[in-house]
Length: 508
Ligand SMILES: Cc1cc2nc3c(=O)[nH]c(=O)nc-3n(C[C@H](O)[C@H](O)[C@H](O)COP(=O)(O)OP(=O)(O)OC[C@H]3O[C@@H](n4cnc5c(N)ncnc54)[C@H](O)[C@@H]3O)c2cc1C
Image (tube, rainbow, N blue to C red; front, side, top):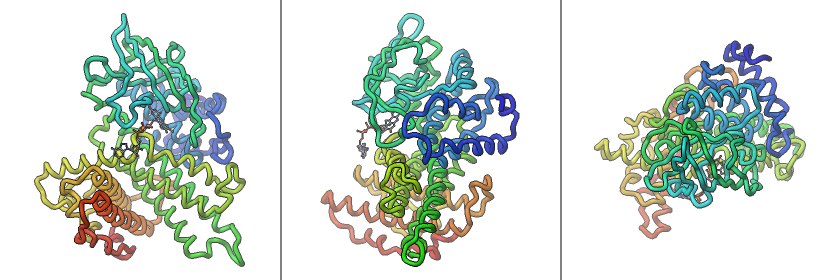
């Protein structure tokens, strides 16, 4: 189909056409190696980049379609969902938002028709979680800038045609963001990393000695690393799209596997515990479906996302942890064959290796939990309220969870917690956010038939998250005791909270 026809299609026809034509990219079939240019060309011809290109530059300019393409792709093949996200949400979105007109013209013309890739270079061997310590520097050099340093773990290290590079001013504590065209030279991959999973994207160690024209500097003016935080908000949100697609696939695959695997006179599906595990995978999908609906319907990649920081952090933490948990459960259900690369009847080995890194990259979850809790604690202190539960009832992103949390003792969670407890508090907040999103989704019309969820699943999914909160409150106490700050028997009452589908957890 020509590009003009693709542009003229209605949204559902465009997405249906995309979905119908990506079977060959299925994770059961696509070779475990960086995607070839010929294969990327097929995706470009299906319009994979069009939603991330503004209309005035010939694209479809659609937040909702950007989300849907990643969700659809992740159901077929999680690494390809990640691939799509990096090029569209991390690279093209930032050119559209902050690029000079001449840069936009050059980039979008290239991405409209050619099988090209854009990556993001932030992380360095000596600074990952602590980006402020980055060593890559920039300074003015004639008509443009010179950037020197070392970066590593970049997706598409050897393959990307374009980069957005973050560098620091050598004297002032200022960070700047530059587009770089690889063919201009100076971006050299000196070592290729052998990653455990996500093999369709290549990784490595890169040395940079770049000269970029003045108009390649992105117009980002927040102090310190404020712009990096906004850029990462978008990719953290996108984990909801990837988790929704991936977990729908695992849920279907797990049910199919246990229903066809013979054991005794019946199948695995006849075993209560097996059905329970299949249901856990299903409920994790339902949670991520709700997180995804929020991203697709209530956020917008074409706007600044700074004010959505809390939701993006909670989304990343919760969706990546549910993906990993379900990938392990699915592999367990597949038995020995689940431990086999290229097994004929399941994708468990790749699913686990691909999902594993989601809790690590894009800011490790432990660090993000700390940010999440600090955001919450700051707002709680500013509110002047004394009860965290009361504050939850007034805090936009959590308020829908309020009535479902009244039977858990949360009162001690905000009493000047130590760093380890702050991390656990962040994890608790991510689960509260999940409950809030489930409450919002239940009873609302599904955005499409593909994303429809049985209403009866909502109270079950809420019960799963509530159970996790109780376990995390327990862990919060444990951390204190392991650090020697004493047992707190009163708080331990939270352990005895029974979470059942028929309890308040199910009210919606
Ligand atoms: C497959 C993959 C793809 C990637 N893609 C890209 C990319 O495209 N572009 C790019 O620039 N980078 C990329 N990265 C880098 C990635 O973002 C970093 O690895 C990540 O941010 C963590 O930084 P680090 O590796 O330096 O870990 P460290 O900062 O050394 O952290 C290691 C561990 O320390 C603990 N920790 C750290 N801080 C805290 C805290 N505050 N509280 C509790 N525990 C903590 C956690 O357990 C954490 O996992 C990728 C990495 C991988 C593995």
